[in-house]
Image (cartoon, rainbow over all chains, first blue to last red; front, side, top):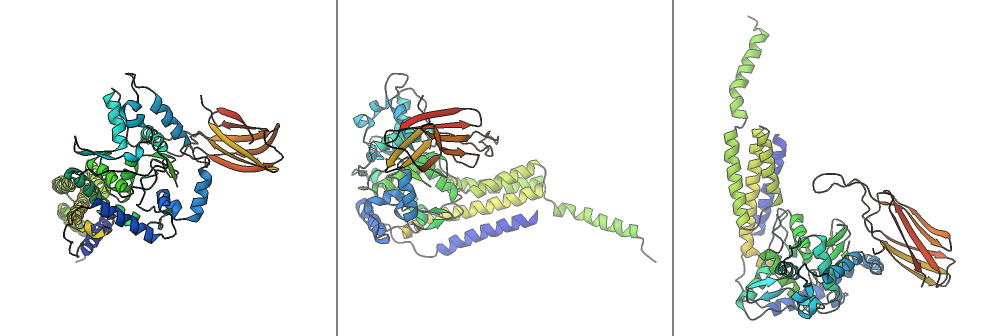
Length: 288
Length: 104
Length: 103
């Protein structure tokens, strides 16, 4: 029984060494949070990295990076695999709760064409509210049990709501409130922080290596990465919500995922959506 | 005088029996190692940076201990502690380091 | 109940291009659920497209085809306005069919 523990010790030691070596540079002084400057820098970085890509096309992830994949995707879009979830979502959205009210009663404009406004910072509560969270609150406020954040029903609902906003530019607001700025900054911190035994941050893949391969997958750029959510992922053989994707990305770096809709995830969604402001909503999407 | 083979066997056996406690881990050893590992993992948890491999090692340690294989259990527990400590180091250093990666 | 078959058939000259998306779990029988139990095999075994009573496309499927399969093929000899009948039969004896007009 000695050999396996030796190897694991070595693995742990190597991981520690890698982190140590990476930690030798001095940290720059903390700067004032300037989301608008961040967003511009974010956009400029990707536009410069992919000069042939159209700005709006970044929302299509790997399809904006790979011609062959794009061709297959365009064909699939004539009969997209998310169609069933979309139809189910439309039905679910229209069906009244036991008390007679509907989802439309919880949202601005009856919930139609509003997806691009999520997430938003709720100044009364002092926290970020995502669309998934808002949907479950709507359910609970009307005496219904909340849906799982990672399963098909939530994905169907957000698929339908995203569809009604297709083409509309992402429009996330950061009110002049230090708590909102803190939430944005927290999301930004989470995005760039390395985690898990594999020591990857979101940026490791989606800022440093978009267009490149991670095993058989082509990595998507971080710019516009949430605009096509929720997605039908062929790898999953089904739909995935934003919650599901954050959780699976965490486990892929061997980090224990946080609870769906935990503060870090909501703030991460806030940051990622804000820096993608102006890019069109393309949900629901499909991915390999 | 030719030493009888049986004497050698008895000698060897008695040496092994005497040495056995030093080779095998005890339940007490396991409990100590596991407690240390759990404490480190708890700290990693408050830093919101637990690793799946740490959790797997803790689980393996528990399972081995339940089967009475304390040697394997201690090995897994020590591995879990090492992984947990590495994750704590990661979380602590990333607190400032993340800024290096920000797009400007 | 809504049909499990979505189809679009477009005639261009003497060639008709057909696309279809079928809603079906297509369980191979090899995957285990969260409790560790094998999910029983449940997949389409035969898929047929008929035009004027003649079968223009037949697929004999097995467990290797994924969930919600998508099919695309082309055939000759049909015209705009003709009927195209699609039907499937799975290993549990369930079936569904639909008829679409070629556009």
